[in-house]
Length: 331
Ligand code: PBG
Image (cartoon, rainbow, N blue to C red; front, top):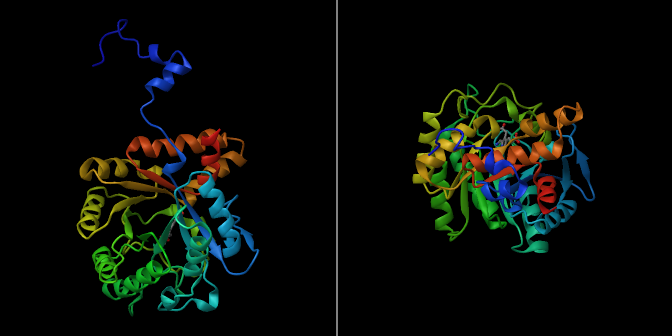
């Protein structure tokens, strides 16, 4: 209990660095970081993404080297996103089911080089594979069809699991997909393949640079508001999480990150399950823009924002700053 001044002086424990260290409630380590990476075709290819300064797409061979560096830094897991060649994108996103697609080749290559040194999380949604940039199949009127899309997502998940994915992470927000994917994984014997559900994913203005990275910004007409959540809602996030847990998710994600820390905290307190948060591309770009404008110290801002996720109750954070942060934490 906090008593009366001057017997109680909350500044007393803050007076010395050793004491601040002793009183610290939350710690951030490289094991808290999941690194999202973009993979593209070719060999020896690195393509910087202008709206995500400091982030590049890499061809599979270079990505393997990045994965090795991440593992050496103690980063436990990568999240892979493919930049599918334009001619392989179609209305039905069939490339998602191709056992030799970019994602599967990247999974196999990293596994071959690094074995179990790093976890591999794969995004399940059709947007990098469709010619229209939506996460699912379109009906006549442009509405994203729920049940028809689930059938493709199940195929996509199995395709990724066969190529070696450790964690299937559906980011599509269709109703009922977690249960369908879990059933299919069990049926094929993938009993230890995890599902990290993007359970509370909002229709956010913070995804712009990501859409540049996977080249969907120009394809996408309209928005994703008929399936991603309304940023005004919080009760609904709890229902989304409840449903995905009941259907067999091992962990859940809240996305975006920093503007939604209240959701992270509510989900953690309500369900007491592992909750992850995605510090998305627009959040990364905001920090980098502030640094470029001379308005902020990058290192301090990166570590403070990541620590905030832990304080809010997150088990870990997907962040494009993962490698930079891990290096800072090793110092
Ligand atoms: C799409 C997907 C998106 C992100 C991850 N998966 C964008 C979207 O929903 O349009 C965004 C990640 C980021 O902005 O960093 N399935």
